[in-house]
Length: 65
Image (cartoon, rainbow, N blue to C red; front, top):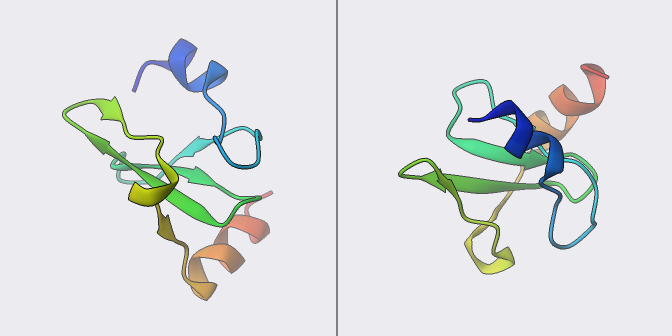
């Protein structure tokens, strides 16, 4: 994902910064606890398309701060 684009994208729900998942397939909203998919190199920033992070993923996100 383009670094400049990643720097300007925010979670549509919380308006907080997003981070790229380790495998590059999702944008993670740590505050919102959601993962938005990236399909064909296009971020899908729709709440209805996001998945909720698991407890383990939330703990991993908070420990990597």
